[in-house]
Image 1 (spheres, rainbow, N blue to C red):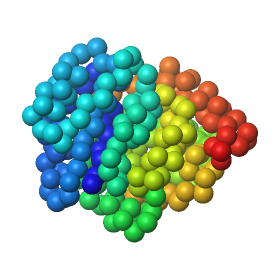
Image 2: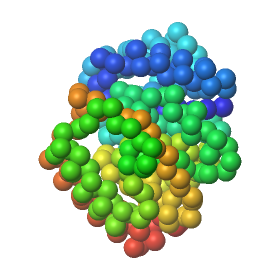
Image 3: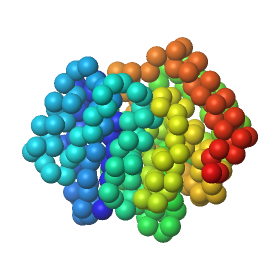
Length: 239
């Protein structure tokens, strides 16, 4: 079975339509699946839309966080509740299409524990770019994350990642970063525990309605990376 985790914070504008797209894509894959929507303390109709979708389709589950804790916390909660043999998470805006899951599954079935989507590997396609400022900040974050969290990854923050069930439990039971930079901690934990990572190029399009606040989130991410680096040096992720 496949488990797909969708962290959602104030996503009422797109959630109903995108949940239908996810279920249609997974149904075409021909395997049993579940979709876990984790409402991260939304202030709009995100929870109500998800609950209605779950009533209409038993393959959809809603998990609610009582307050807004951050994307990392939402993904962690969903991944730890997943029942599938393979666990994916993707953004509610479907910046990367759920159709890409079919391209990730062969690597997972062949024994690769973690497969990361990458917008920077050869063969990737970006249909709508972010602003130059955001792309520049993304490149800086990637360099810092590679230095502080773990080398060899070209794209830490692409919101499309797949895991074997065992790797998901091993990674997310140790994840401590609730907000931005949790993706870098995933890599840091995997590197510390000797879990193999493969990147696969994806087709990606920017969502102009993103909830990212550049200056605030850049500062939060920088201090989170320092926290991850301290954790690596202390050997916390090996325990």
